[in-house]
Image 1 (spheres, rainbow, N blue to C red):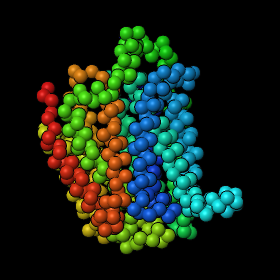
Image 2 (cartoon, rainbow, N blue to C red):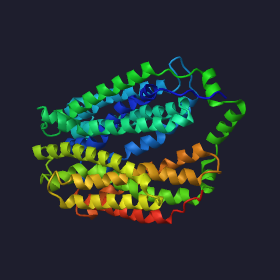
Image 3 (cartoon, rainbow, N blue to C red):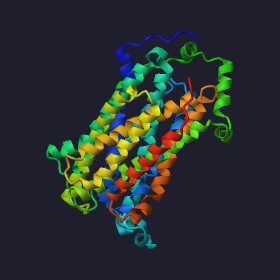
Image 4 (cartoon, one colour):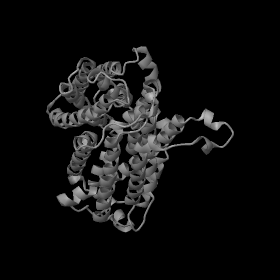
Length: 455
């Protein structure tokens, strides 16, 4: 097997540059989906149901893209075709989704069979929005996965840490840009109010510009990156018939058997993941309503106050992203990994619990910096524990694919029961921030049941 060549900084940069555009799209979705659907008329008690789609699409699409691209060879490469198709679909959907409320449906559109009496304009609008959200999630996941695989394919072990650091920087930079877009466009004078059931122009133009940046970034990566042909790939990655058979055996292994034989750490970290990701699902779902209630004293989705709150949520999420980057640099200084993990979740829990009691929009920066501490740990710590525990078990790829379920499944469960919990805590969306805080504190306690594998 030939040694993979060292790549220059700019070659490493080009491999991941498209991730910047993909992450802008993902940030726009995370910060604005609840705002869009509430503007379209969704009841807050039903809001969490819309958030079932992102994790569901993630758990379905990413493994499929990974498996299919492993077997794909074209003149354009093996990963890039999926990247380009995913990005193209995402661009189209980003132009349609925020306009869901602008489509008019006349009674005779459904014929004379009385269907219009059953499917109201609001219902059709909501269904259209859900369809667009499903396509957006699918396409973003399809565009996101190839970047991780390109690094695995073309970067040698010595440079992988540097390559993933560049990818992490572009990911966080894209997040901050996407989060701030609605606030920025409102500052430029684009309307942040609209008639009832219509999404404001500030949000619509955020999606338009985000879509344009996404496709330009992906085109840049497509033009600058030349994937190896099959012969070169085999030379650099040591693909032999025996290893190919082993890979096929691993990918077709019995998942139930693998789960049955998984180390206890796999399940214990999964327990922490359950509470952590449930908490963040409620943050993404209810922060807009919570900030509108506590800072702007508004529950009217047609009001100027509610839309200002929606813009400010993007700013708060950007603050969280910056806090996460800073705390990620602090985490390696802890000698006790479990203490670092647990403390990070405690800080995040405190941050969530503070939100309902703060009525100043700028003071909200404090809890969201703390929430960023939890986010940094959630992205780094779980895979550290699990990969260490899996040494010697084999089937590493299959196990990590299954472990991705500990991210997606908790969000699906939390989305299904979100409306019930909201009823139980008094139907105020800010109360769900306290629920999220309690979930993180429970998760922080569960960290201490993890047994680290001794080196």
